[in-house]
Length: 137
Ligand code: NI
Image 1 (cartoon, rainbow, N blue to C red):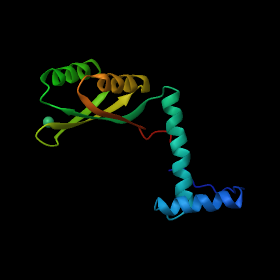
Image 2 (cartoon, rainbow, N blue to C red):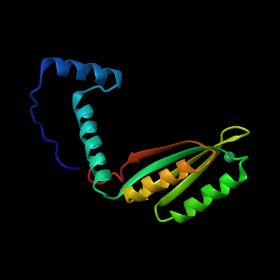
Image 3 (cartoon, rainbow, N blue to C red):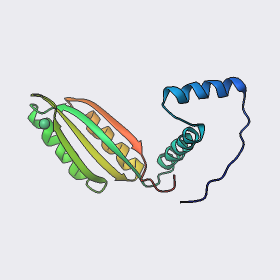
């Protein structure tokens, strides 16, 4: 762990007031932790924009009774096996499945995989959670 550094920040009183209200609603107990998270948020965004190695998850909700759909989703995932590090399948109810696909690699490939899964007919919902490998943030 690198040493902690203190630095001063000047900003408008109103803005600080709104920030403090925001921190309270987000359950932060101090400004430092909230500012650390904001900085990391920006750094992770930058990693995605600059094509650095990233990690994240893709969540897919679909009806497994559509047999062709299940094969299609599996085919797509096999084409992206270089970035998929894990998958978890949850049977939500009689019809609906939730699949969580963990990815690590290039942002472009992760985005492309999410887009391809989303575009499959009968897929009900897809999200891509853009996170980080935890390095350099
Ligand atoms: Ni299922």
